[in-house]
Length: 180
View 1 (cartoon, rainbow, N blue to C red):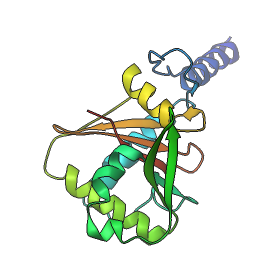
View 2: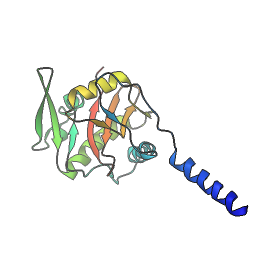
View 3: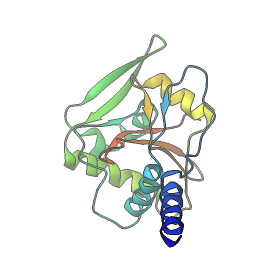
View 4: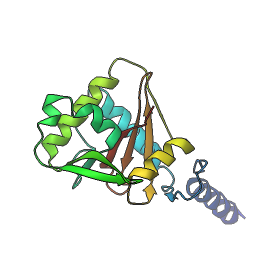
C-alpha cells in the first residue's frame, strides 16, 4: 500500500511540473505564433529584468545577429555612436514600402545598442508582458519568419519595445519599438 501511495504522489508531482500552464494570447488572423515550453518565457523575463538593471553581463548579446527593427532604427540612427556602427544597413520591404533597419553582427556593437536601450529604460518603471494583437500584427508585418517565444513587450511610460529571443540560446534576435 505504501508503494502505491508513493507512486501516486510521485506521478502527481511529475504531472504538476510538466503541466504548467502556458499563457495563451489572442492572435490576429494569419499570424503564426509558436509558444515556448513551460518556464522559458518566465525565465526570459527574469533574465531581461537582470540585464535591465546595473548588470554588465550582456547575456542576450552574442547571437549571430541582432536586428534593430524599422521603428526603433528611426530613432537609434540619430544616436551618433549607434549610427557609426559599420555594416549591417538593411531594407525591409513591407506592403511595397521600403523601411530601413539595422543588422548588428558584432558583440561590441550589440552591447552599444543594449546600453542605449538601458539608458532609455533607466530610472522609470517598466512592465514585461506578452504582446497584444495589434503589437503582433505590426511585428508580423515586418519580419520574414514565424514568431516564436520568448517574445516580450517591454513597456515604459513613453515607449513599448519588442524583444524577441531565440528560445534555445536566449540571445536577442529582434529589437524594435511598437509604432505609436
